[in-house]
Image (cartoon, rainbow, N blue to C red; front, side, top):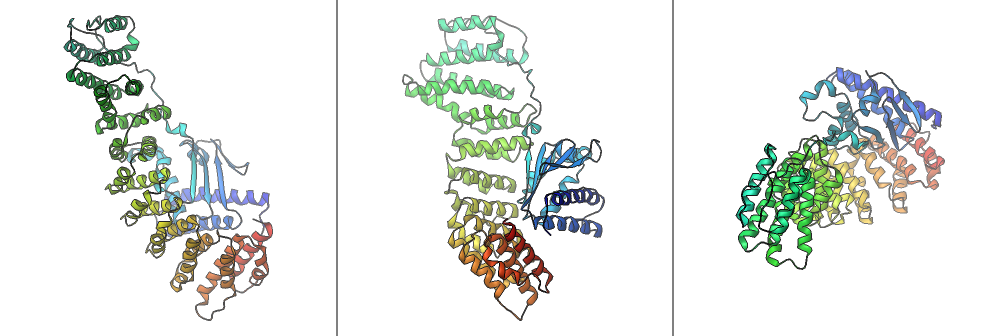
Length: 556
């Protein structure tokens, strides 16, 4: 049956109603209950029937509506039992189900959407659906999130604290030390304002007088004072004192959520380092500040700020990241597993993608982290960086104890076109876990070389492959059809032509897989062969052959 446009819309409407009904049913019954099992199987059958004619199902989510192919298929203005609002309020704007969807993935998706987040938020570490969807790491369910929903309101009432007093009129750095200490105390208590008049240099005196008139720029002015002192420093002690004060300002500012002051200070440091008149001794001390912002102490403060309700603007974080060196990699990875919000974790992941390439060995060393979810994130970061030097490190992680890490490694090797990993991926095709086997086949398909094609043909030709589940075999055959060349065409046609008197049940499954994939290859020369099997007694082979014929005739 060919799906017309109107028929297509009707099928999707019915499928969505089945999904909504399944959401309610699975919430009522425990896993394993016959009603639970039947509901899941019926819904999955609906999806697979749809995917016989379409490659993906994309639903666009509005506040009270769900749209498919520009057609509204769901509307509910009420707040209760509103599927659209349920997804929309967590920022989900679009969901796509791909034709490779597995029943296990559909079940895990349903487990997420049956959660009543409003009632159960106290029991959860994070009360949003996006977090759970991200943790599931779906391969065939994709979603688009409106990032503004992930951002809490930014509190813009914060007024940066600055120096309000300096005691005494000394003539050396000791005077500035006393002024600085009293200044920080004033920032915390915000009690009294005393004229700043350190007499060491005329310029500092002028800035001190201005600070009394304009309290809004106190911290910036203190930084300016410290840089002036640094530029006039005489000897090692003066340099060390200036750097110590600047470190204190960086720590103080981040503690109070003022990352702007830190960035401005670091910008001044960079200018000093770029100045040809700056002495080597002075540069040595200034570089200490760039090392300091990558320490565990400062990275922890950054993580707390990212996790806070105010958060950090993406552009501001990028400016801060530009000052970080490779020494920040380990502290960043350490806090990655401790952050509470998905927004903060995404920010740290993006930061590691930016600086991870500065030292691939240091980043890859984090694959030894004891936390599986951190290791999976490091694999993802390596994939985003795209440096093929990472392949050797990833191969050592393929034996990780957690299947989610192994799947991420396998996927990464495929997307990085890691041809050196073909042998290891080939071995994974015989893994005891079906998810690993399928992930490996997909990775080999992504590599897409003649050697990769040969591996898949050899695998599907093996006797033990015939004993595997039909859905797994169909998946591997479908991956093989990506080559669309004479070798694959002849191989698939050969399976249909081959006669066997033993194990005909499994043989029919192989023939059905071959027929299905011939439809995907897109060569109409195989139509006469497919017609021969369009009316055979075996139901599976007959229906799949008919579907393949329609695909070829419609040119899909």
